[in-house]
Image (cartoon, rainbow, N blue to C red):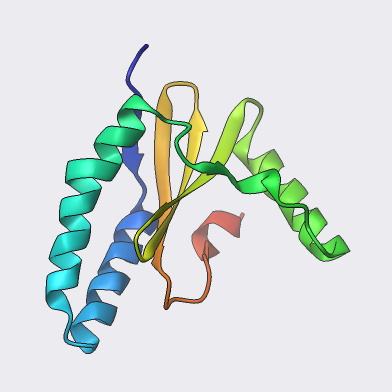
Length: 124
């Protein structure tokens, strides 16, 4: 089995910066170091070997018509053969896309943060 090639997006990097700021604000800077240790020591190596480790993002059925339309748009933007998955690691949720052997880290959020936000992704 070929190992997946992992790429972090700018959005993912900005999310990490936001998490670092959040943890510094609550005087838990050591938690950020632990997050980085987990990401580079455990999570990313596991995803390289098992890229489908996370849960299928689309397994949940949208509860509103608007959510269903947004999910359809998201599927279109991902393109054919791509998968969107989420992986929970302790207090963090990682959102990533997979296309063939390439895996794109899209976002990471601490459970205290509200939602994924892709402002640059949705602008034409």
